[in-house]
Amino acid sequence: MTEQTTPDSPPAAAAKPKEEESFWAFLVKLVLIVGIFRSLIFSPFNIPSESMLPGLVDGDYLLAAKWPYGISNYSLPFSLPLLPGKIFAHQPLRGDIVIFKAPPGNDVDWIKRVIGLPGDIVQMKDGVLWINGKAVPKQRIEDFEVAVSPNTHCYAPDFQKTRADGTVVCRYPQFHETLPGSPGQPDKDIKVLDFGAEKQNPIPGFDADNTPPYVVPEATLFLMGDNRDNSMDSRFAVADGGISFVPQANLVGRATIMMWSTDGSAVWYEPWTWFTAARAGRIGHTF
Image (cartoon, rainbow, N blue to C red; front, side, top):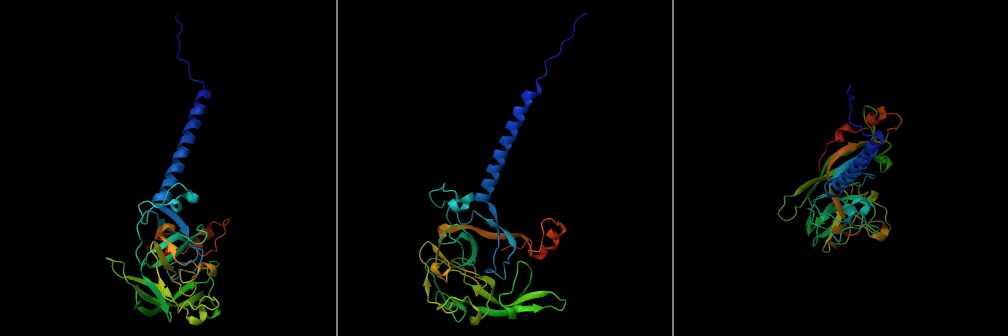
């Protein structure tokens, strides 16, 4: 009788190193893909303040496009110092909502709207924005309302109102402005809040509704919040908590789409509150 033989089976131990090697290779590829996506394409940001009301509310989470203004160290995760400067740099358009590294530390992300481009003259007169010697058209429209929540508190007690259904809201004076377009671009319609001169940011000796003319230097931007009386922006010196003129090199990205919004009432160990806290009507909003 002839004895049958079978090929030796590879030992199980030999397969294990290959599986581990495959896992680590996959993990490295995943990290690289995510890093490239966040650095060059889109990156998430959250809104931690109310300086951009009425368009952006505390608790909003948006995606910022990283490529429109070029790529720099600030575009990379942790602002890794790997690039010599800004690559493929492009100047933003007047009216763009931009995310940038705020002076003087250049280590915290802020979000504001582009108001002045290099060479522009920007000034506030009696609460009206002037650009290059011309008043920006400003028209009172319906009040803006946002529900009071853990993420939202009224700027002053007299702004707090109660709707007929019992919902407590903050009701603010809202205006329509038409910003002059960038060269070759159409004018841009925006909505802003204006609380009035008596409720503006309390900086001793400085009236943010009546400012000197600011001449925007080359390679910088003049940025403002849409919540005109509750925004520390380019009207204010860095020493006073503002940002003065922001270098274009500090730009990180342009706001594009709202991917989530929460009123702050969610509790992590109560999953149903993740949905009841969502401001569903804000999701998908574009800029």
